[in-house]
Every structure is written in C-alpha cells, then in structure tokens.
Length: 386
Ligand SMILES: Cc1ncc(COP(=O)(O)O)c(C=O)c1O
Picture 1 (cartoon, rainbow, N blue to C red):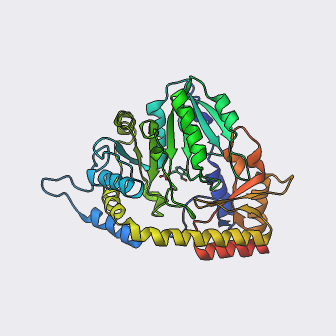
Picture 2: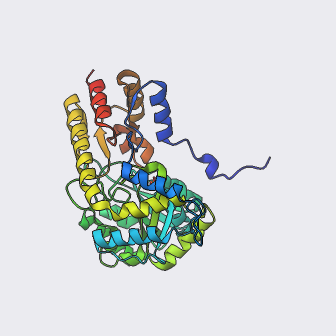
Picture 3: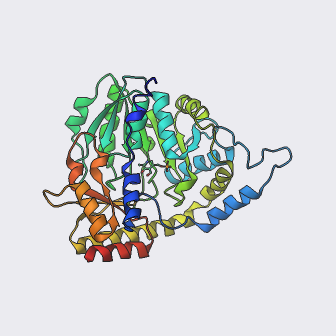
C-alpha cells in the first residue's frame, strides 16, 4: 500500500490523553487536563435547551439545522459588542468575525489561510500543542523561542535574531498556557516593532482573556498599529466552563477573515447551531457572571498555590489562566515525577517537557490545573501531604 501522509502519521497521542488514561487506571485525582470537573452555569445550559426545543420555524431556518457557515449573525454581533464594551475594539460582525469549532479550529484555519509551505512562524515555548500540529500541516517552518522560568521572559536579542524576510507570523498566547504568564505591554510593544519592521502577522490566542486575577486583559489587537496584522482568537470554553461546546472565533481584517472562512467552510462548514443561539444570548449577559467567575477561580488559585507551597513545592503563582507551574528539585525529571505522583500520591499532573521542542527547561517543571471542584483540590492537597 502507498504510504499515508507523512506529517500527520508522525503525530503522537497528546500528553493530556496519556495522563488522563494513567489517572483513570490508577484512580488518581486528575489535575492534568485543562477543563473543569464541574458543570457550566445552569442558566447558559438552559438557554441551549430552549434553542434545541425550537423546531423548524416557518420562514426561518430551524435551530437544529445547519447554521450559516460564518456563524449566526446574533452571535457575531454579540462577540463584536463584547470587544467594543470590554476593550474598545471594533470588529465588524458582517465580515471581520468567523465562528469556529473552538479556538482550536480557528488556529488550524488561520494557519492554513496564512501560511505557504516554507514560511517561518515564531512560537514561544512552552506552547499549546495544537500550534505545532496546525503549523506542520500548513507546511510552516516552526521557529521556537523559549520563555525562561521563573518569570517566563524571552530574550529580545534572540527573538530579533531569528526573524527574517521569511517570517510570516508569530503566535502569541496571552494569558499563557501553561505558565500563567501575562505578557507585559513592553514585551508586546517589542514584538510590535519587529512585526512592523519585518511585516509579519500575529496570531493572538486569547482563550484565557477573562481568567486574569490582578489585572485586566489587553488584547494584542488593541496595541497601536497591530489591529491590521493581528488575528484575535478566543472561545467560550474557558470563560463559561463549557469546553465541550466548542464555540470559538477568529476576528481580524476582513481579507484575512475571508481566507480563514474559506478554510472553515471546507473543514467543518459550521458550528452547532443551538449552541450558537445560546452563546449569543449568554455573551450579552456576561457582566454579573464574570465577577463571580473571577472570584471563584482566584480562590481556587490561592488555595492550590498555598497548599502546594505547604507541601514543599516550588510553585509559581500564575497571573492568569487556570494553571500553575511548579519547578522540580534539581535532578528530578518531569515524566518520571508525574508517573511517581500518580502511583504514590494518586494525583495526576502534566509533565511540561511535552510543551517544548527546543529547550530542556520543561523537563524540570510540572503543570497543575485548578479548574476543579474545591473538594477535588482539597483531596489532591491531602493526598500530596501523605
Ligand atoms: C492556549 C489554548 N488555546 C486554545 C485552546 C483550545 O480552545 P478550544 O477548546 O476553544 O478549542 C486551549 C485549550 O486548552 C488552550 O489552552
């Protein structure tokens, strides 16, 4: 038989699936995968139930049939209104927003839409694993720049030295998974200067935009001059604790969004219609929800961080996201450590070497997820104390 595609057959099982399987096999508390072990808000789920119950309306498209490929207009309008309200950013719902199956599909479609084989793309490591896969499928040359622990800063000279005329795009994830870092305005302005000088795009993955604890999020597109070259990607998975709904989007200049939509229409075509209806309504009512949401996660962060410190972990307090990184003792290896933690303490976390392709830094760190019930976090700390 002729060989299959040489790029995708090389992809390995994601570290999240591996750790989750191990956690289940050994009855461990799972602080590895990045999603809540509690349900999303009932009022949002009720909105979806209502949408599912609306049959085919006369003269209208039934909510259980295909949605318009770019996303239903009320959802694009709600997304647009929120960018205006929260960040004073204008995205035209008619042609500057496309709704996708989670941020993951938006990332894939953006890579396919922007990259020609051989183009170079800068990625800060550690990174969310779908960047590498999407870039490889698009034929990009991936150029990693390491964020250095404990503050996860990058070397500006190193960044400048790898940028050249082939650099097509830089991927920025802010707030950043897995480190919990929020990029400073100085860092983003440095990136902006390079983007202007070398004319590259910025894909800004902002799925944790509402999970910032001491400061408000600043979208990359709101920095002077960056809107015209930034693709802003976000989703409702983290914000509403409904990761299974996979409602995401990309916003940006209309020519770029058109190209991203061209990919979207021939991969998934559209996103689950009733869930879009529910999200369009939920996004309109976010203000009250966000106060409790942030408080709840801030408490979880503080509980986990102080618990881990008590147990003796060198844990770094994250400024955003629902992850905390801990630096291991010298000589410890992340993968061995995680396996031991599952077997001996019945707690599963993520070895961070999986998020790096250049540096060895990840092999002495592990990532904890605190998007978990208070009871789960309490039990995890108790297990670690034993
Ligand atoms: C940085 C980052 N981007 C994107 C995603 C995926 O978002 P979605 O579930 O909307 O596809 C995740 C999920 O963990 C993530 O951590």
